[in-house]
Length: 217
Image: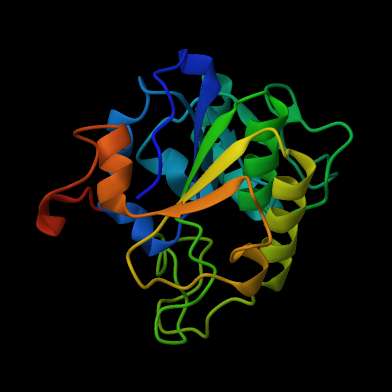
């Protein structure tokens, strides 16, 4: 159990949503009034975070084709393959990182002092692709081999080291995979907490019945 921070202003709290399947335990719609929400890639299909981060050109162009970028903040890296640059916001300078770690860095860079990380599972599910959007357009199949997570991990590690005055809370199930680079005592400003502890921070945000989790598109 961790010590809860004192109740703080909205702009001191951020939620960074990766798309690992552990995120399905959380009702993301309940987070929007609790802090700033940073989501990645296809999350736009079912939810509107405050900031949507996508760096893969195919995914950026999918978002553009939907028109989502015209009414929501979509952030990406400069790339000549992007079809419509009028409404998209660009990181300058950009990190050249994957979407999830870029979103994490973006949240910390904006000055949020308590950053909650959800769906950063890193490891596959029994060696298979771990993503809530598996088997959908622009994503691998759930039967495919798990994606190598070394780059995501290194980029996460660098962000946590850079923002030592920010406290990061990675939300995981008890016994879930904790990469060596994120394990104690490497970071004094990173805590691993359970979903139950997360709900102690933010009551009503965890699904009590997995059958009631929002289905993905």
